Length: 516
Image (cartoon, rainbow, N blue to C red; front, side, top):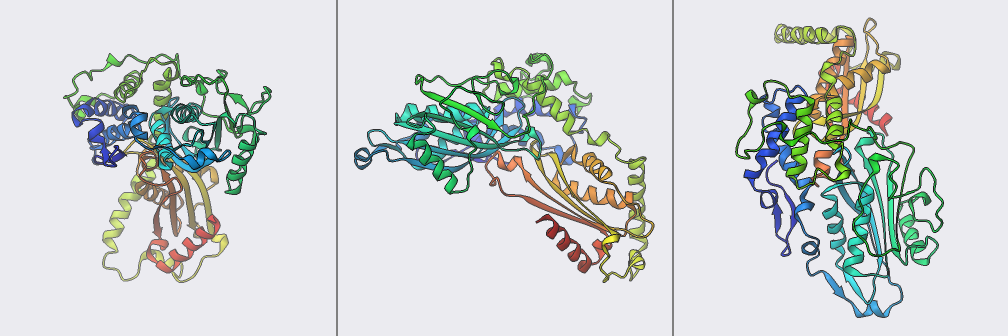
């Protein structure tokens, strides 16, 4: 991935990974990543994984850059006094749709979304508008809970600007929920925004609604102390996965509230909650790099947990703080679950069928090299569009793990199969099992798409198939390389669909129409 720019200094110059974390200090992180790769049964010397430890180590540095930056240096000299603002009555400043990505302290999975900030200046003191986004990203570039992230932004603005009031609304998707996750909304308010019926809060909400951001009342502070299952103060400790520690705040008139949809955040307890000893495997020598022979014996789960503890220490975390108790165990459990697909057999004798078909396809390619007409064309006129009864179509959500950065990517697999009279039709459960078998492993999207196409062609014996995978990649979102709404689309076709571009175009058009 190289040394990517992750922030700027006071002069506006780029600050790179190398500036914040010297190359020599990445060795302990890389060794810890090698232990994790070995623990999931991977061959760390294979081509796709040779540079993964280095890429993952630098990605961890990128997403934890907030530990090595200071709030005052981020704000710089961007606090101004505007007399005309001090003479006005209640001028409100709102910056909405600040995109952010952070890492959950509970399970080390990403969460990402948008933050909306409002404050009412006091004595004409205002902050450069770009700094609100930088303050958000400063705190997001640490291990976080969404609640604490919301509160830290509010407390920072209160302390630096001393405004008449501040309000924060944050909405985020948590990868721990799965690819179908609802938005999790949190809010914090102080001063003139404390009362939801106040003119300041009503004007803020009006502006958010005006621009298409509905804010459910359960996500907002209430004057009353009534509680419900969807409304709980951040100091609640009833859910261990929501445990957090708020920053010190001397203003007693500050409210922090949260709300979420019907799905619950991943809340597995993860064993005893104690962190495995960091000294269980030898990473003390930062100049020593482990190779494939060092990991020839697959790491144990305990080794993997110790490796995670090393990563937490190296990025600047205190692994003894209460919010991180059990985090290594939870992360290892999730990593093992998300890479279990290679051991699954979605249909009887599937792996044997696949190997036989791959061998046969190589032989057929050699035999048909000098043939004018493809063998599959005898089953159907390539210019004839198959009827609906001859096709099966599926749109199935999936999640996988990028082998380059060990971060999730998730999206939708769109599948259309053109059957012959004697080909095997699949059930939805079989399609899902096939997708799980290939997505639950360290992957790249291009390989996943082609593996699905090969598997479906082999299992069904169909005339042809087209597969498109559309996914968002957290390795790009978390590091700020792409916007949250961006997606990557990959395509693979087999049989008639691969041989005839007209038919393939018709099938792709059908998939796109159903997708929209």
